[in-house]
Image 1 (cartoon, one colour):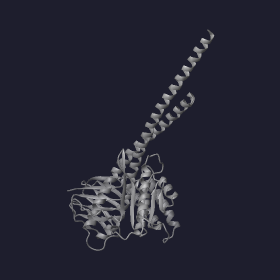
Image 2: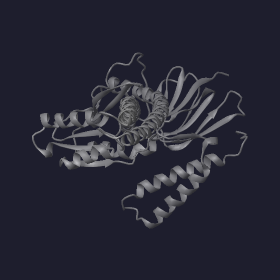
Image 3: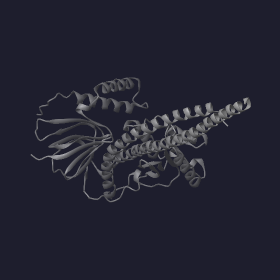
Image 4: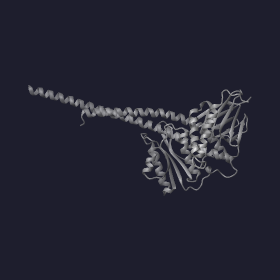
Amino acid sequence: MPSMRDIKEKINSTKKTRKITKAMQMVAAAKLSHAQERAGEYAAYADKLKEVVSSIASGKKSGGKHPMLESRPVKKTAYLVITENRGLAGAYDSNVLKYTQNLIAEKHQSKDEYTIIVTGKIGLNFFEKRGYPIAFSKTDLEDEPTFDDVIGLARQAVGLFDDKKIDELHIIYNHFVNAISQRLVDNQLLPLTNIESAPAVKTNYIYEPDESDVLESLLPLYAEGQVYGAILDAKAAEFAARMTAMRSASDNASDIIDHLSLAYNRARQAAITQQITEIVGGAAALE
Amino acid sequence: MSTVHTEIVTPAGKIFSGEVHMVSVRAKSGELGILPHHIPLVAPLEIAQVRLKHEDEKIVDYAAVHGGFIQVSRDAITILSEAAEMKNDIDVERAKKAKEEAEHQLSTLHESSEGYPEALLKLKRANLRLDTAAIADPVAES
């Protein structure tokens, strides 16, 4: 049985841990609200962009299709996997990583058929350790990424597709549903196939100089925007996941402290009882 | 005089939203001045200034818009760009620094070498920011 001093020390250290997890929970909560704000700001841009792109894409009939809209035989697929740097966010990373691992095992026979683009140290370590081919990675994303931070990564990814080094680009990340739940999302980003949904109000635009030129400059913008949107979404999910993880860590710490306090009190009682017995025994022996 | 609702939207949010009388932009195909009731139009933009002329002609807002495109629909004009700033939001110090960096890069690189077009674009953006920020206030438009 541990001594009273041991128990006391354990209680103290658990209390300190609880302080830290509580602080982290609050930090995550604050960052979550920032991330949500950003995602809201971005949504205005994304909606507009989508409206224009889909109205062009669905209205366009003449001439050949833009390469970004056209599915070609898939020889190589790229997976853009979004993870984070720090861990301590529950199953946030392992969900994404496991899903990717299974997906690859299911769909591809050899390493030539796919490549991985990854953000976040956790994901990078995971894939490096297992010897997956990594096209490039980004591990210095801030907690509140600006468009400028992300644009390099997005351009590189879209560039791979443009240069025909890859024929499909998927993006896998945790989607923020609400503060207590995240959902895994696997989106095909390129080629853009789901874009030709008919817009609610059909407007016949004039294109200056012409449709294909407009598409030429619009589609990369759209694809890059999608990557940024996904990263914002994933960041929000990350903070939500971390908040939940830290809340349950704090709850667990409280439980442990309760248990330990009980054990401590028992030990104290036992010690007192023993002392009394000794005194009583000693007194009896003197009589 | 009629006006049209105009917005400038970037990934970081709306930087301008309001009623204006005329929007002039430089599209890839040339200068465009758009008045209310314009036919629906979509055009990609250059890295250039955007002028927003208000109903009171003396008030003109300037924005530095770095590419993107303009979408004119029946009752609204939207300028979408990956980066754009209103005149008063421009960080002049940063733009100056960026300009110096870009000029330095350009002086060390050859036209055909890698990174040259990027540096050129960077210089263009920095110049645009500085030019836009330097416009005297208030501006009497001729």
